[in-house]
Length: 165
Image: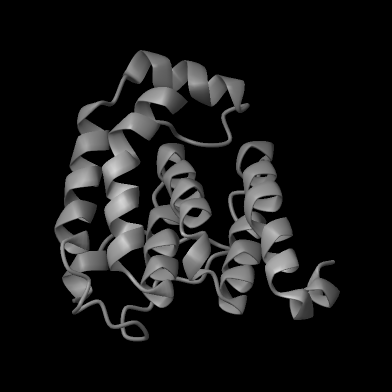
């Protein structure tokens, strides 16, 4: 189990992935899909485009150099299968794991996956999204997380509305 999430680095705002708190034993093909999606995205690295993308974001982040439409096409099946197979806690763990990668495309993948997992949102998803907003913060992910996750979560769980600050 711990091999699944080893060596992905840590970040300041998002707590390191604690693989002991979530049972991934019944994660089905998601373990293999995680390795596959990493390899797929890394194999499509475009160093020239990565420099331009980083420059556009004022060199705040590293990029693989994969544009949005290509990334979405490459990750569509991964997201579909992950959302279908994993429970809420496992999806949260996967999102944190993706967020800890240094390449920005993995944070975009986490945003896309969490947005797609709407039926598995819980009040704990709200806490996760707040953590993600505070870590590696820049307009590109903050706008997505606030508009497509934080706001809809506050509407879905009215008891969370007083926690939005």
